Image (cartoon, rainbow, N blue to C red; front, side):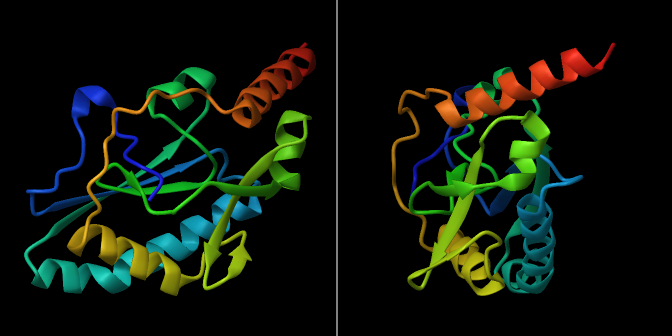
Length: 173
């Protein structure tokens, strides 16, 4: 796992709790095919696995969050778009990215967004099997990792927000 990215004030994982917090962090749900597609798959997977989690005594909370600024990205320790976390832990083993035309258009800069790696393949929108397996593993077999690693806003996201701000300010009159 990429490690816990919980906001320090909220603490790390709720490992001893029967609550499951699934967070979906993204840059854009209006035009980005990758973010929109991941959102659709994630919501479908949560509907399918929620009965099993509920049967096992877990309560699932789902939060969607548009990361709309550098400050927000820093506050939520955002590494790549889109990101899915379970109890503060990124469900992906690593951050792999490729060029994202949609987000590049939004910011007017070259932007790379997350690629989900599963069974030796790269996917811009994760397969439902990958999400179901990763979420269930995070709940039933959580990895113990420190969430106190220093965070630095990735250059890629810094460029995205800078470009988006410049594009919006030059076009707003």
